[in-house]
Image 1 (spheres, rainbow, N blue to C red):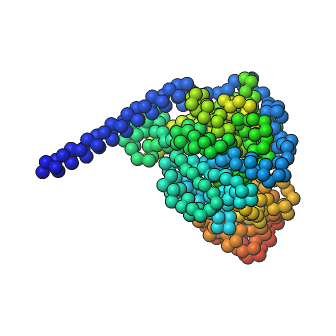
Image 2: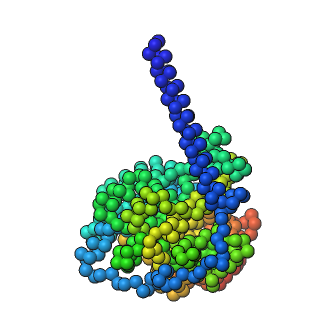
Image 3: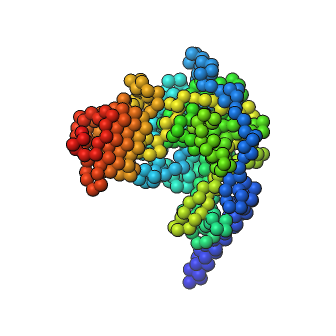
Length: 475
Protein backbone atom coordinates (compact mmCIF):
# COMPACT_ATOMS: atom_id res chain seq x y z
CA UNK A 1 0.00 0.00 0.00
CA UNK A 2 2.87 2.34 0.86
CA UNK A 3 4.45 1.61 -2.53
CA UNK A 4 1.17 2.43 -4.31
CA UNK A 5 0.80 5.67 -2.33
CA UNK A 6 4.40 6.62 -3.11
CA UNK A 7 3.87 5.92 -6.82
CA UNK A 8 0.64 7.93 -6.83
CA UNK A 9 2.36 10.87 -5.09
CA UNK A 10 5.24 10.70 -7.57
CA UNK A 11 2.87 10.79 -10.57
CA UNK A 12 0.91 13.64 -9.01
CA UNK A 13 4.13 15.60 -8.43
CA UNK A 14 5.28 15.04 -12.02
CA UNK A 15 1.94 16.24 -13.37
CA UNK A 16 2.08 19.33 -11.15
CA UNK A 17 5.64 20.00 -12.29
CA UNK A 18 4.63 19.59 -15.92
CA UNK A 19 1.70 22.00 -15.53
CA UNK A 20 3.91 24.50 -13.70
CA UNK A 21 6.51 24.37 -16.47
CA UNK A 22 3.80 24.92 -19.08
CA UNK A 23 2.54 27.97 -17.18
CA UNK A 24 6.08 29.31 -16.81
CA UNK A 25 6.67 28.88 -20.53
CA UNK A 26 3.40 30.62 -21.37
CA UNK A 27 4.33 33.48 -19.03
CA UNK A 28 7.75 33.85 -20.65
CA UNK A 29 6.16 33.68 -24.09
CA UNK A 30 3.71 36.38 -23.03
CA UNK A 31 6.53 38.68 -21.90
CA UNK A 32 8.39 38.02 -25.16
CA UNK A 33 5.30 38.58 -27.28
CA UNK A 34 4.42 41.75 -25.40
CA UNK A 35 7.92 43.12 -25.80
CA UNK A 36 8.11 42.57 -29.53
CA UNK A 37 4.53 43.70 -29.98
CA UNK A 38 5.15 47.03 -28.25
CA UNK A 39 8.24 47.64 -30.33
CA UNK A 40 7.16 46.46 -33.75
CA UNK A 41 3.36 46.64 -33.82
CA UNK A 42 1.05 49.55 -33.26
CA UNK A 43 -1.76 49.42 -30.72
CA UNK A 44 -4.18 47.77 -33.12
CA UNK A 45 -1.78 44.91 -33.81
CA UNK A 46 -0.69 46.16 -37.23
CA UNK A 47 2.87 46.21 -38.60
CA UNK A 48 4.86 49.44 -38.33
CA UNK A 49 5.04 51.32 -41.63
CA UNK A 50 8.19 52.52 -43.40
CA UNK A 51 8.81 56.17 -44.22
CA UNK A 52 7.85 56.23 -47.89
CA UNK A 53 10.06 59.19 -48.82
CA UNK A 54 13.19 57.26 -47.76
CA UNK A 55 12.65 54.40 -50.23
CA UNK A 56 15.10 54.17 -53.13
CA UNK A 57 15.34 51.76 -56.07
CA UNK A 58 18.31 49.38 -55.69
CA UNK A 59 21.13 49.60 -58.24
CA UNK A 60 22.42 46.67 -60.34
CA UNK A 61 25.25 46.38 -57.84
CA UNK A 62 22.69 45.61 -55.12
CA UNK A 63 20.28 43.56 -57.26
CA UNK A 64 22.56 41.79 -59.72
CA UNK A 65 21.11 40.74 -63.11
CA UNK A 66 21.45 36.96 -63.48
CA UNK A 67 22.79 37.30 -67.03
CA UNK A 68 25.87 39.15 -65.73
CA UNK A 69 26.99 36.27 -63.49
CA UNK A 70 30.24 34.60 -64.51
CA UNK A 71 30.15 31.16 -66.09
CA UNK A 72 30.91 28.20 -63.86
CA UNK A 73 34.36 26.60 -64.34
CA UNK A 74 34.09 23.57 -66.63
CA UNK A 75 36.57 21.62 -64.52
CA UNK A 76 34.63 18.91 -62.64
CA UNK A 77 37.01 19.07 -59.66
CA UNK A 78 36.31 22.80 -59.25
CA UNK A 79 32.58 22.19 -59.45
CA UNK A 80 32.88 19.46 -56.81
CA UNK A 81 34.80 21.90 -54.60
CA UNK A 82 31.96 24.45 -54.93
CA UNK A 83 29.23 21.94 -54.15
CA UNK A 84 31.06 20.44 -51.17
CA UNK A 85 30.60 23.82 -49.46
CA UNK A 86 26.82 23.72 -49.91
CA UNK A 87 23.80 22.55 -47.91
CA UNK A 88 20.23 22.57 -49.26
CA UNK A 89 17.52 23.47 -46.74
CA UNK A 90 13.84 23.09 -47.57
CA UNK A 91 11.14 24.74 -45.46
CA UNK A 92 8.90 21.80 -44.59
CA UNK A 93 6.59 23.16 -41.90
CA UNK A 94 3.42 23.54 -43.96
CA UNK A 95 0.48 21.15 -44.17
CA UNK A 96 -1.41 20.27 -47.34
CA UNK A 97 -4.79 21.15 -45.82
CA UNK A 98 -5.49 24.05 -48.21
CA UNK A 99 -5.35 21.56 -51.08
CA UNK A 100 -7.48 19.01 -49.26
CA UNK A 101 -4.59 16.77 -48.17
CA UNK A 102 -3.48 15.53 -44.77
CA UNK A 103 0.11 15.58 -43.52
CA UNK A 104 3.05 17.66 -44.82
CA UNK A 105 2.46 19.48 -48.08
CA UNK A 106 5.77 18.15 -49.38
CA UNK A 107 4.25 14.67 -49.84
CA UNK A 108 1.63 15.79 -52.38
CA UNK A 109 2.25 14.11 -55.74
CA UNK A 110 3.39 16.71 -58.25
CA UNK A 111 4.28 14.84 -61.43
CA UNK A 112 4.52 11.23 -62.62
CA UNK A 113 3.72 9.94 -59.13
CA UNK A 114 6.62 11.90 -57.60
CA UNK A 115 6.05 14.13 -54.57
CA UNK A 116 7.73 17.46 -53.86
CA UNK A 117 10.11 15.64 -51.53
CA UNK A 118 10.83 12.91 -54.10
CA UNK A 119 11.82 15.54 -56.66
CA UNK A 120 14.07 17.33 -54.15
CA UNK A 121 15.85 14.11 -53.18
CA UNK A 122 16.33 13.08 -56.84
CA UNK A 123 17.76 16.52 -57.70
CA UNK A 124 20.37 16.46 -54.95
CA UNK A 125 21.15 12.78 -55.42
CA UNK A 126 21.81 13.47 -59.13
CA UNK A 127 24.22 16.28 -58.23
CA UNK A 128 26.07 14.10 -55.74
CA UNK A 129 26.40 11.27 -58.27
CA UNK A 130 27.45 13.51 -61.17
CA UNK A 131 30.19 15.41 -59.32
CA UNK A 132 31.11 12.96 -56.55
CA UNK A 133 30.21 15.61 -53.97
CA UNK A 134 28.27 15.49 -50.71
CA UNK A 135 25.43 18.01 -50.66
CA UNK A 136 23.18 17.15 -47.69
CA UNK A 137 19.46 17.91 -47.51
CA UNK A 138 18.14 19.65 -44.43
CA UNK A 139 14.41 19.80 -43.68
CA UNK A 140 13.04 22.40 -41.27
CA UNK A 141 9.82 20.89 -39.91
CA UNK A 142 7.17 22.34 -37.64
CA UNK A 143 5.44 20.56 -34.77
CA UNK A 144 2.67 19.93 -37.33
CA UNK A 145 4.88 18.02 -39.77
CA UNK A 146 7.68 16.52 -37.66
CA UNK A 147 6.28 13.07 -36.86
CA UNK A 148 5.04 12.36 -40.39
CA UNK A 149 8.28 13.61 -41.95
CA UNK A 150 10.41 11.35 -39.74
CA UNK A 151 8.50 8.34 -41.10
CA UNK A 152 8.56 9.56 -44.70
CA UNK A 153 12.34 10.13 -44.91
CA UNK A 154 12.92 6.46 -44.03
CA UNK A 155 12.05 5.59 -47.66
CA UNK A 156 15.20 7.43 -48.77
CA UNK A 157 17.53 5.39 -46.54
CA UNK A 158 19.30 3.84 -49.55
CA UNK A 159 19.61 7.09 -51.48
CA UNK A 160 23.03 8.67 -52.01
CA UNK A 161 22.12 11.66 -49.91
CA UNK A 162 22.32 12.62 -46.25
CA UNK A 163 18.97 13.86 -44.95
CA UNK A 164 18.87 15.83 -41.69
CA UNK A 165 15.78 17.23 -39.96
CA UNK A 166 15.13 19.74 -37.20
CA UNK A 167 12.11 21.53 -35.81
CA UNK A 168 11.41 25.23 -35.82
CA UNK A 169 10.04 26.94 -32.72
CA UNK A 170 6.42 27.00 -31.64
CA UNK A 171 4.80 30.05 -30.07
CA UNK A 172 1.42 30.59 -28.41
CA UNK A 173 -1.24 32.31 -30.47
CA UNK A 174 -2.31 35.64 -28.97
CA UNK A 175 -5.96 36.51 -28.38
CA UNK A 176 -6.56 39.62 -30.51
CA UNK A 177 -8.64 41.40 -27.86
CA UNK A 178 -6.08 41.43 -25.06
CA UNK A 179 -2.80 39.98 -26.46
CA UNK A 180 -2.90 37.15 -23.90
CA UNK A 181 -1.64 33.71 -25.01
CA UNK A 182 -4.43 31.43 -26.19
CA UNK A 183 -3.14 28.44 -24.13
CA UNK A 184 -3.67 30.51 -20.96
CA UNK A 185 -7.38 30.58 -21.84
CA UNK A 186 -7.71 26.82 -21.87
CA UNK A 187 -6.72 26.05 -25.49
CA UNK A 188 -3.91 23.69 -24.46
CA UNK A 189 -3.82 21.50 -27.59
CA UNK A 190 -2.09 22.15 -30.91
CA UNK A 191 -4.64 24.82 -31.84
CA UNK A 192 -3.17 27.09 -29.16
CA UNK A 193 0.22 27.20 -30.87
CA UNK A 194 1.77 28.05 -34.22
CA UNK A 195 5.13 27.92 -36.04
CA UNK A 196 6.31 31.57 -36.24
CA UNK A 197 7.16 31.81 -39.95
CA UNK A 198 10.33 30.98 -41.86
CA UNK A 199 12.24 33.86 -40.26
CA UNK A 200 12.64 31.40 -37.39
CA UNK A 201 15.08 29.39 -39.52
CA UNK A 202 18.07 31.30 -38.11
CA UNK A 203 17.68 30.63 -34.35
CA UNK A 204 16.22 27.15 -34.95
CA UNK A 205 19.17 26.12 -37.10
CA UNK A 206 21.47 27.26 -34.30
CA UNK A 207 19.45 25.86 -31.38
CA UNK A 208 19.09 22.46 -33.03
CA UNK A 209 22.86 22.02 -33.15
CA UNK A 210 22.72 21.48 -36.92
CA UNK A 211 24.52 24.77 -37.67
CA UNK A 212 27.61 23.80 -35.67
CA UNK A 213 27.57 20.31 -37.21
CA UNK A 214 27.51 21.70 -40.75
CA UNK A 215 30.27 24.21 -40.04
CA UNK A 216 32.44 21.45 -38.58
CA UNK A 217 31.97 19.54 -41.86
CA UNK A 218 33.35 22.48 -43.86
CA UNK A 219 29.99 23.68 -45.17
CA UNK A 220 29.89 27.42 -45.92
CA UNK A 221 26.57 28.20 -47.62
CA UNK A 222 23.00 27.02 -47.28
CA UNK A 223 20.41 27.35 -50.06
CA UNK A 224 16.99 27.87 -48.45
CA UNK A 225 13.73 27.49 -50.37
CA UNK A 226 10.09 26.52 -49.92
CA UNK A 227 9.51 22.81 -50.47
CA UNK A 228 6.59 23.57 -52.83
CA UNK A 229 8.67 25.68 -55.25
CA UNK A 230 9.65 23.14 -57.90
CA UNK A 231 11.77 25.76 -59.68
CA UNK A 232 14.09 26.18 -56.68
CA UNK A 233 17.01 23.98 -57.70
CA UNK A 234 20.72 24.36 -56.95
CA UNK A 235 22.28 26.94 -59.29
CA UNK A 236 26.04 26.73 -59.69
CA UNK A 237 26.39 30.23 -61.18
CA UNK A 238 24.78 31.78 -58.10
CA UNK A 239 26.82 29.68 -55.67
CA UNK A 240 30.06 30.51 -57.51
CA UNK A 241 29.23 34.25 -57.51
CA UNK A 242 28.55 34.30 -53.76
CA UNK A 243 31.76 32.46 -52.90
CA UNK A 244 33.88 34.62 -55.22
CA UNK A 245 32.37 37.89 -53.94
CA UNK A 246 32.05 36.87 -50.28
CA UNK A 247 28.34 37.74 -50.13
CA UNK A 248 26.86 36.73 -46.78
CA UNK A 249 23.26 36.79 -48.00
CA UNK A 250 21.53 36.57 -51.35
CA UNK A 251 17.82 36.82 -52.13
CA UNK A 252 16.62 35.63 -55.51
CA UNK A 253 14.10 38.06 -56.97
CA UNK A 254 12.31 37.88 -60.31
CA UNK A 255 10.28 40.28 -62.48
CA UNK A 256 6.85 41.00 -61.06
CA UNK A 257 3.67 40.23 -62.99
CA UNK A 258 0.07 41.21 -62.17
CA UNK A 259 -0.22 37.90 -60.29
CA UNK A 260 2.59 38.92 -57.90
CA UNK A 261 1.56 42.45 -56.89
CA UNK A 262 1.34 41.59 -53.19
CA UNK A 263 4.79 39.98 -53.04
CA UNK A 264 7.60 41.58 -51.03
CA UNK A 265 10.22 43.56 -52.94
CA UNK A 266 13.79 44.72 -52.35
CA UNK A 267 14.46 48.40 -51.71
CA UNK A 268 17.37 50.55 -50.62
CA UNK A 269 16.42 52.12 -47.28
CA UNK A 270 18.63 54.22 -45.04
CA UNK A 271 21.76 52.92 -46.75
CA UNK A 272 20.83 49.23 -46.54
CA UNK A 273 19.17 46.74 -48.85
CA UNK A 274 15.86 45.78 -47.26
CA UNK A 275 12.78 43.66 -47.91
CA UNK A 276 9.55 45.65 -48.12
CA UNK A 277 6.36 43.68 -47.43
CA UNK A 278 2.87 44.97 -48.20
CA UNK A 279 2.03 45.01 -44.45
CA UNK A 280 4.69 47.72 -43.98
CA UNK A 281 3.29 49.97 -46.71
CA UNK A 282 1.20 53.00 -45.61
CA UNK A 283 -2.40 52.67 -46.81
CA UNK A 284 -2.12 55.64 -49.15
CA UNK A 285 0.81 53.98 -51.00
CA UNK A 286 -0.53 50.41 -51.35
CA UNK A 287 -1.55 50.89 -55.00
CA UNK A 288 1.87 52.32 -55.76
CA UNK A 289 3.48 49.29 -54.09
CA UNK A 290 1.41 46.98 -56.31
CA UNK A 291 2.53 48.78 -59.46
CA UNK A 292 4.71 46.64 -61.69
CA UNK A 293 6.16 49.80 -63.22
CA UNK A 294 7.74 51.18 -60.02
CA UNK A 295 8.39 48.00 -58.03
CA UNK A 296 9.47 45.64 -60.79
CA UNK A 297 10.77 42.68 -58.79
CA UNK A 298 9.54 40.48 -55.95
CA UNK A 299 11.01 38.01 -53.49
CA UNK A 300 10.92 34.35 -54.58
CA UNK A 301 11.98 33.23 -51.08
CA UNK A 302 14.95 31.41 -52.61
CA UNK A 303 17.71 32.50 -50.22
CA UNK A 304 21.44 31.80 -49.99
CA UNK A 305 23.07 32.29 -46.59
CA UNK A 306 26.63 32.17 -45.32
CA UNK A 307 26.57 29.77 -42.37
CA UNK A 308 29.32 31.53 -40.38
CA UNK A 309 27.45 34.82 -40.74
CA UNK A 310 24.22 33.20 -39.52
CA UNK A 311 26.06 31.93 -36.45
CA UNK A 312 27.63 35.33 -35.75
CA UNK A 313 24.34 37.20 -35.99
CA UNK A 314 22.30 34.69 -33.97
CA UNK A 315 24.91 34.63 -31.19
CA UNK A 316 24.87 38.44 -31.10
CA UNK A 317 21.03 38.46 -31.13
CA UNK A 318 21.36 40.93 -33.99
CA UNK A 319 18.51 39.66 -36.20
CA UNK A 320 15.75 42.09 -35.22
CA UNK A 321 13.38 41.31 -38.07
CA UNK A 322 10.08 43.09 -38.56
CA UNK A 323 7.09 41.34 -37.02
CA UNK A 324 4.33 40.37 -39.44
CA UNK A 325 0.94 40.12 -37.68
CA UNK A 326 -1.11 37.28 -39.18
CA UNK A 327 -4.76 37.37 -38.03
CA UNK A 328 -6.55 34.02 -37.73
CA UNK A 329 -9.63 32.57 -36.11
CA UNK A 330 -9.38 29.47 -33.89
CA UNK A 331 -12.58 27.83 -32.70
CA UNK A 332 -14.43 31.14 -32.95
CA UNK A 333 -11.70 33.16 -31.21
CA UNK A 334 -9.88 35.87 -33.17
CA UNK A 335 -6.14 35.49 -32.65
CA UNK A 336 -2.87 36.97 -33.84
CA UNK A 337 0.19 35.04 -34.98
CA UNK A 338 3.33 37.16 -34.78
CA UNK A 339 5.60 35.90 -37.54
CA UNK A 340 8.90 36.83 -39.16
CA UNK A 341 10.09 36.35 -42.73
CA UNK A 342 13.58 35.06 -43.52
CA UNK A 343 13.85 37.66 -46.26
CA UNK A 344 13.60 40.47 -43.72
CA UNK A 345 17.01 39.46 -42.33
CA UNK A 346 18.83 40.68 -45.45
CA UNK A 347 19.66 44.09 -43.95
CA UNK A 348 21.67 42.58 -41.08
CA UNK A 349 24.16 40.67 -43.26
CA UNK A 350 27.36 42.15 -44.69
CA UNK A 351 27.67 42.46 -48.46
CA UNK A 352 24.07 41.27 -48.94
CA UNK A 353 22.66 41.26 -52.47
CA UNK A 354 19.69 40.27 -54.54
CA UNK A 355 19.98 38.44 -57.86
CA UNK A 356 17.31 39.03 -60.50
CA UNK A 357 16.76 35.46 -61.71
CA UNK A 358 14.70 34.00 -64.57
CA UNK A 359 11.04 33.31 -63.77
CA UNK A 360 11.75 29.59 -64.19
CA UNK A 361 13.28 29.58 -60.70
CA UNK A 362 9.93 30.52 -59.20
CA UNK A 363 7.36 27.79 -59.83
CA UNK A 364 5.40 27.32 -56.61
CA UNK A 365 2.44 24.96 -56.34
CA UNK A 366 -0.01 26.69 -54.02
CA UNK A 367 -3.29 25.55 -55.59
CA UNK A 368 -4.74 23.01 -58.01
CA UNK A 369 -4.36 25.54 -60.86
CA UNK A 370 -0.58 25.43 -60.29
CA UNK A 371 -0.74 21.63 -60.20
CA UNK A 372 -2.40 21.66 -63.64
CA UNK A 373 0.52 23.70 -64.99
CA UNK A 374 3.31 21.44 -63.73
CA UNK A 375 1.49 18.20 -64.59
CA UNK A 376 0.78 19.31 -68.17
CA UNK A 377 2.85 19.08 -71.35
CA UNK A 378 4.06 22.59 -70.57
CA UNK A 379 6.78 20.92 -68.48
CA UNK A 380 8.96 17.84 -68.53
CA UNK A 381 10.93 16.26 -65.69
CA UNK A 382 14.59 15.22 -65.73
CA UNK A 383 16.74 14.30 -62.73
CA UNK A 384 14.09 15.71 -60.41
CA UNK A 385 14.00 19.09 -62.18
CA UNK A 386 10.74 20.35 -63.68
CA UNK A 387 11.81 21.92 -66.99
CA UNK A 388 9.83 24.20 -69.32
CA UNK A 389 8.88 22.62 -72.64
CA UNK A 390 10.75 24.55 -75.39
CA UNK A 391 7.72 24.05 -77.68
CA UNK A 392 6.01 26.83 -75.70
CA UNK A 393 6.83 30.04 -77.56
CA UNK A 394 5.11 32.43 -75.13
CA UNK A 395 7.57 33.18 -72.28
CA UNK A 396 4.68 33.62 -69.82
CA UNK A 397 2.68 30.76 -68.38
CA UNK A 398 -1.05 30.66 -69.16
CA UNK A 399 -3.43 32.15 -66.59
CA UNK A 400 -5.52 29.38 -65.03
CA UNK A 401 -8.56 29.76 -62.77
CA UNK A 402 -10.29 26.61 -61.53
CA UNK A 403 -13.53 26.71 -59.55
CA UNK A 404 -13.95 25.39 -55.99
CA UNK A 405 -14.93 21.98 -57.40
CA UNK A 406 -11.24 21.52 -58.28
CA UNK A 407 -9.75 22.88 -55.03
CA UNK A 408 -8.96 19.56 -53.37
CA UNK A 409 -6.28 17.47 -55.05
CA UNK A 410 -8.47 14.37 -54.98
CA UNK A 411 -11.34 16.16 -56.75
CA UNK A 412 -8.94 17.79 -59.19
CA UNK A 413 -7.53 14.40 -60.26
CA UNK A 414 -10.99 12.84 -60.62
CA UNK A 415 -12.22 15.62 -62.92
CA UNK A 416 -9.39 15.15 -65.43
CA UNK A 417 -9.26 11.76 -67.18
CA UNK A 418 -5.87 13.02 -68.31
CA UNK A 419 -4.27 16.48 -68.06
CA UNK A 420 -5.10 18.54 -71.18
CA UNK A 421 -2.45 19.81 -73.58
CA UNK A 422 -1.91 23.51 -72.81
CA UNK A 423 1.21 24.32 -74.85
CA UNK A 424 -0.73 26.92 -76.85
CA UNK A 425 -3.06 28.08 -74.06
CA UNK A 426 -3.23 31.75 -73.05
CA UNK A 427 -5.89 31.55 -70.35
CA UNK A 428 -8.37 29.06 -68.91
CA UNK A 429 -11.31 29.71 -66.62
CA UNK A 430 -13.36 26.75 -65.37
CA UNK A 431 -16.42 26.91 -63.11
CA UNK A 432 -19.20 24.56 -62.12
CA UNK A 433 -19.54 20.78 -62.44
CA UNK A 434 -17.05 20.27 -65.28
CA UNK A 435 -15.34 16.99 -66.23
CA UNK A 436 -12.52 16.65 -68.78
CA UNK A 437 -11.98 13.59 -70.96
CA UNK A 438 -8.65 12.22 -72.16
CA UNK A 439 -6.38 13.92 -74.72
CA UNK A 440 -8.19 17.28 -74.58
CA UNK A 441 -6.32 20.19 -76.21
CA UNK A 442 -6.79 23.79 -75.01
CA UNK A 443 -5.57 26.77 -77.08
CA UNK A 444 -5.86 30.55 -76.84
CA UNK A 445 -8.46 31.87 -74.41
CA UNK A 446 -10.86 29.21 -73.12
CA UNK A 447 -13.80 29.52 -70.72
CA UNK A 448 -15.69 26.42 -69.57
CA UNK A 449 -18.62 27.28 -67.29
CA UNK A 450 -21.24 24.66 -66.49
CA UNK A 451 -24.78 25.89 -65.90
CA UNK A 452 -26.01 25.72 -62.32
CA UNK A 453 -27.12 22.21 -61.41
CA UNK A 454 -25.88 20.70 -64.70
CA UNK A 455 -22.91 18.41 -65.37
CA UNK A 456 -20.71 19.41 -68.31
CA UNK A 457 -18.43 16.80 -69.85
CA UNK A 458 -15.68 17.66 -72.33
CA UNK A 459 -15.34 14.53 -74.54
CA UNK A 460 -12.09 12.68 -75.21
CA UNK A 461 -9.95 14.30 -77.91
CA UNK A 462 -11.82 17.64 -77.89
CA UNK A 463 -9.89 20.68 -79.14
CA UNK A 464 -11.07 24.00 -77.68
CA UNK A 465 -9.49 27.11 -79.20
CA UNK A 466 -10.59 30.62 -78.22
CA UNK A 467 -13.92 29.22 -77.13
CA UNK A 468 -16.51 29.76 -74.43
CA UNK A 469 -18.40 26.60 -73.46
CA UNK A 470 -21.55 26.53 -71.31
CA UNK A 471 -23.10 23.29 -72.54
CA UNK A 472 -22.57 20.30 -74.85
CA UNK A 473 -23.93 22.29 -77.78
CA UNK A 474 -21.04 24.77 -77.55
CA UNK A 475 -18.34 22.12 -78.06
